[in-house]
Length: 183
Image 1 (cartoon, helix red, strand yellow):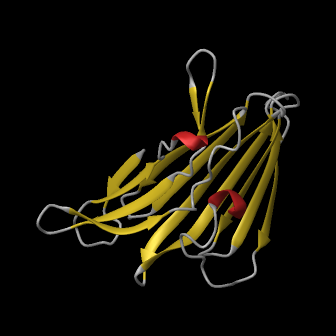
Image 2 (cartoon, rainbow, N blue to C red):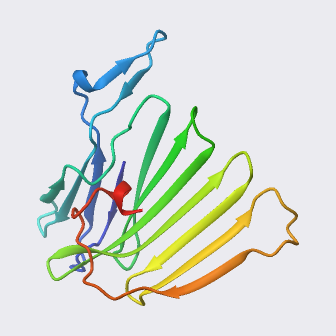
C-alpha cells in the first residue's frame, strides 16, 4: 500500500510505502494453494526532489505489525492529508478464536526533522454483543475522548462519551515502537 502527498511542506510530492517481503521461511501454504505471509512489513518514507525523483529518507523495519497467525489478518492503509499529516491505519480481524475486531489510526506530522505522533484513535467492536468503544487521543491538545455504544441497540439509546486530560510528555517519534504496541 502507498500514499503520496507533501509531508515536509516543500511543495513537492512525497511517497510512503508499506511492503511485505516474501521470505519463504515465514510463509505457510494451505492445501488450496493460498499463501499466508507472516513476514514483518516494512514502512518506507521517500521525499520528492526538485529533479522529480524520490529519495529514500528512512525505512522502518519494526513499525507495522506482522500477521501473527493464519486466523488473524492485519490490513494496513496509508493516507497523507492536505496539511501533510501521515495517517497509518491498522485493521485487525480474527476469523477464529475471538469475537473482536479492532481498527487503529495513527497520525504523524513531520517537524524538526522527524515524524512525531500527534494523535491516535482505537476502535474495537465485539461481533457477538455489538459493544463498541472508540478512544481518541490528541497529543496537540492533550485530551482523550472515550465513546462507548452498542451497534445492535436502538438508535435512541444515547452513546456514552467521556473526556479527560492527558499528561503532557514529549511527542513520540515514528519508529519508537511497534504500532500494535502503541494502542
